[in-house]
Image (cartoon, rainbow, N blue to C red; front, top):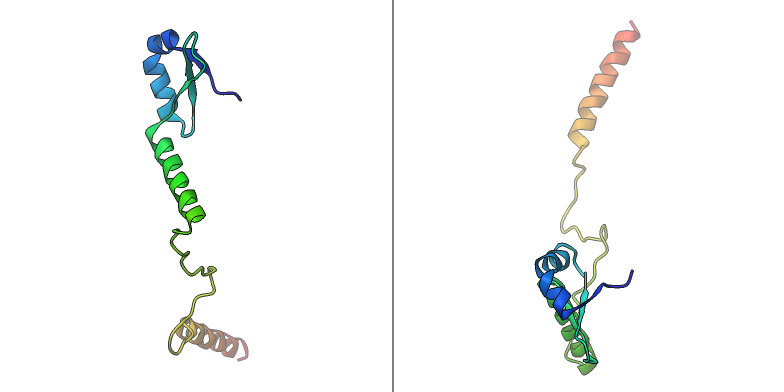
Length: 109
């Protein structure tokens, strides 16, 4: 879907509605033109603009070689557990096994 295009006069009349449109939907753009002018203006939400500026800065840093090195990536589940690991369910399993043995013994009478 192409972004809507408004003339300055129409945009002035619908400014509140246009403001609501760009702030309610991240990334929503509204182009504003002027009769006789070759260039256009774009109305976007502040959070979207900030995100674009941050992305542009990161790209410039990468291109210039000033990017911060990426932190060490760890896949979920590949964690390191220091020290001895005990079975957290050992007590529960022992209790259940004792109950099961008791039940079997009562059935065997």
